[in-house]
Length: 140
Image (tube, rainbow, N blue to C red; front, side):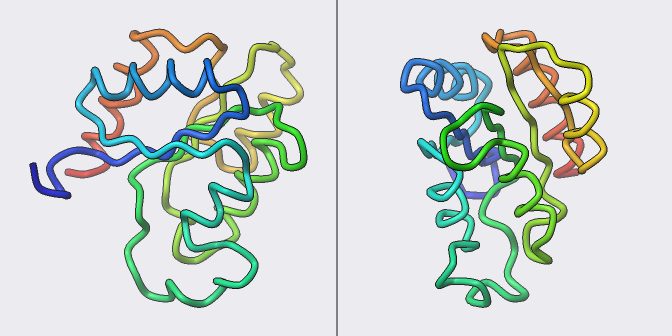
């Protein structure tokens, strides 16, 4: 399959089991998935790492969507969201935040900062269907 045929999603979670679950659900929905175990790794993949600030200027973002856990050591999903939205190369990439905690102020803060959606963990196939439906629309 060609690169453009299936949406490419970057899944970020410090918990290996959650990361595998997200990857499996996305692949079931015909997505290409890259995983990262933390925010700095995700930024590196996106070309937003500290030493790579300007390499991607003018290039298309590498992914069609980022789905990230909120609670991660070092850099939270919220911090990652802010970094993605601050960059001219990635600010249009939809970011979905997942959390096992239902904290309305946290959810609102993420949505105000530009998150596409906030999903309760564990992720379900029905959540992924909503995401991929949105992805397909974004691509059209």
